[in-house]
Length: 106
Image (cartoon, rainbow, N blue to C red):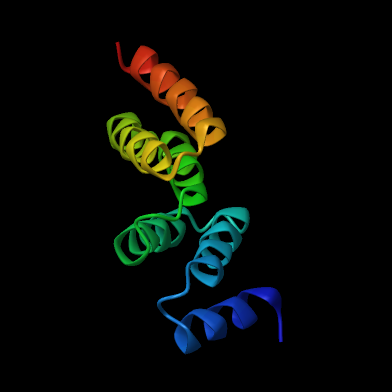
């Protein structure tokens, strides 16, 4: 079984675990299946709103898809979540991405 199939099975078997869903979103992104990746990142944020790594990667994907306003909203939410988790490194990364996204929209 290939990596994609394995990740899809893991998500189906454990739909509430964050890491398999994150891995599947990243695999879709790597394969250029951006719509599916965006849907998977959105599902990750819905099911596991405290999973900080998903916000930066989701925002990056949305920017690459030309959806800057959506990316900025994801980054902003990620800043809130990372701040609540006390993850200052992630707050810094997400804040920088948010600033760049907002500058690109101006």
